[in-house]
Length: 143
Length: 143
DNA sequence: TTCATTAGTTAGTCAAACTAATTATCTGAG
DNA sequence: CTCAGATAATTAGTTTGACTAACTAATGAA
Image (cartoon, rainbow over all chains, first blue to last red; front, side, top):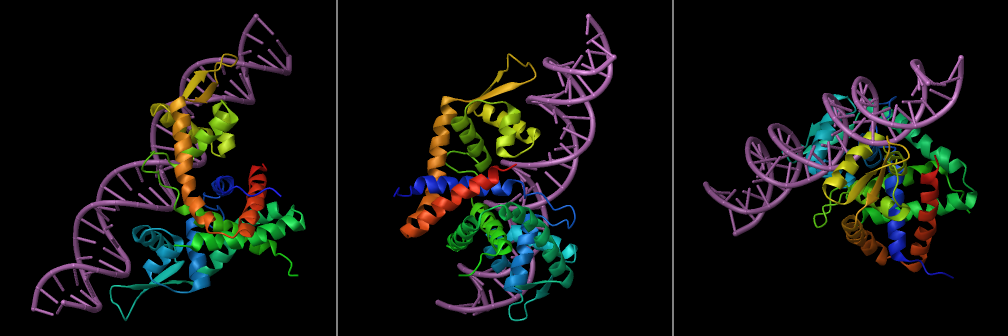
């Protein structure tokens, strides 16, 4: 049995991630949701309201980057900032009903692209990706 | 045995790719190579000289985007454009010796980040990623 | 009480993507 | 053989999303 070469695996992981994402950077015409916005909304929906710092960390961007992103979401009525009553410096960022609905629509539309590709795969390949994606998310979450 | 849910797999694949890449967008301080530049150089090294259109297609960007990227690479002495003698509209883009060396250095440094993560994994997980990344590249290459 | 730390924002910059329009060349239908 | 449409690449201009540096306001510990 051939031993996996970590360098080659790393190389392919890097290349595959780049290529798979390249076409998905642009905003979805229908919903107007870009990948970063959709991703941030998803975090707010699935992990609940949180501070800007927490959200920035979850999305692995700096606080100023997230500050701007949240400001845009707020302008579009997709999220809302409440003052944190315990710490007056802080904010609680929450998704609105509109944001939740648009997130679900955007997610559905964006994932349709992936689903179309995955639908053609044999079951074994899908199972392989199932396991691998869980692992990849674990790796991504590290430090 | 639980059946893999394509929607969930698609979702995780999307999220994982985003998160894994987010930190790698920035140029590497040592080599000055951004991910797109490194990636384009890699294509030139591994697939050989080619036209701008071909390179753009390989990298899944529009020709203007690639035109600018190649112009930058040329300014930095990493690639060179030759006129295509068969079609005077076209160019042949080639990596220089300096470009090749920097690509290898950049690749080594960039992949070190991944390798560090992968080094901690059990063999079975590495083998899983080995298979999965091959599959992902196949999927990404589809039209 | 005061001063370092922390949360968030603002200002300014940059890279990399896009579309639209332009230039130069090629090619095939009449 | 010619010229009208197609093609290769570039230029111009815009947008998005990332960053750092510097700021304000609030906190908390010595």
